[in-house]
Length: 355
Image 1 (cartoon, rainbow, N blue to C red):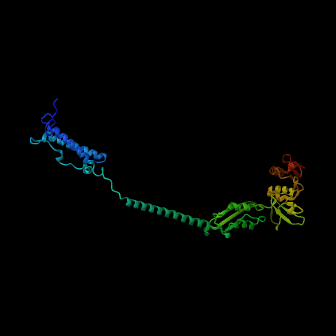
Image 2: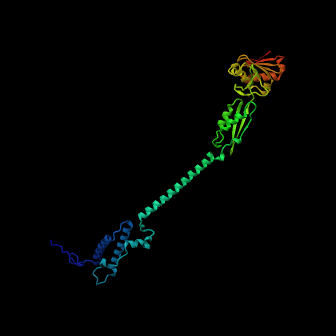
Image 3: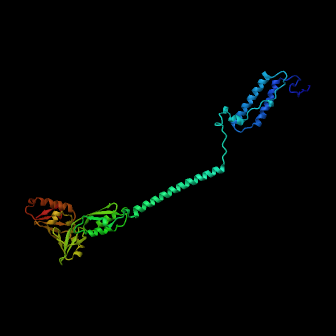
């Protein structure tokens, strides 16, 4: 078989005939497009789209030249001699691609200057925070000093007032307890401690301490009269409360207060018979206490009181004293039901007897 002759002439085919001029042009155009892709190499998807668009326009123009614009004297069109197109960067910035707002190039950042700006912002923020923290500490310190340690709210002894005391509860004793808090800020004054200490005084049933800002304190005491007065053989009188605590010395009349005759007032307070008598007398109403002319307590279960109207009441001991009082009051309200009896025995309140 005869070998095939390849012609090197751009217009000749392999068999010596003339090759169509448009075919040659397209081949050259393809090579030019590939060469253009290399020279125009652009990283990124938008760059590749621009290159493909440019290549399509070149191919379309070369085709039009092949079909419509070629002259009889031209053999073929060299794409390398065609009018150059805009670069990819120019096309990206053109209005057809949305302008620089859509495909704007990133701003070149000066990293040392940016780092210096950030450090300055951090310093400014830390200084502001430190200043605020210092201001808060100063304000809290000043407020603490003003409220707790300055003379602004200091309790003054001259502004401590006492009320409710009587002959048997000394006002001086109450004042001495309250005066222990003088010189302190009213915020630090412990009123509960004051009330407890005053309440432990003999004859005091309750106490209430109230702060009077900015410098005062008022103490209200509820004091009771003595449950009885212990009369010793030597004639000395000792006032005691229902719990057997000694009250102030008796310098006044003891009228209206029951009297218990004992040998020694101090030692008698340990006697159980005397203790039971004090508990009973301490619970009686004031009207009945004033009628008592004599108290006998030979044993702890035989406490007896004699009234000024001639009645004798045998109480026994202090157990069930509320019921015993109710029975006695009921009988004394209507003396007719006693049928002339003068002795009421409520040692056993549910089986009270009269004679």
